[in-house]
Length: 90
Image (cartoon, rainbow, N blue to C red; front, side, top):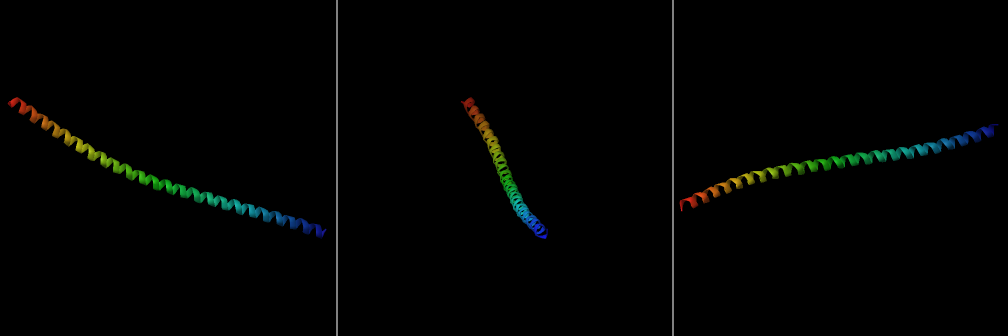
């Protein structure tokens, strides 16, 4: 009976060791997946910041173009007025 008990305990210890190894393996996979998700989140955050900076830059460029367009429209109106006055003087 002692020999059989030792066999049962031995197989139980083997089974527990296998389960511990499997649990450790799954734990490492979970840690790897969590680290990957953190890395992806940081990459997305960095990409979002880059895009926000690009949006701000494009908005500034748009404002410069708007001001330039308004200035050119004023110059065009002034030139058209000058041309009209010149034509009426002749």
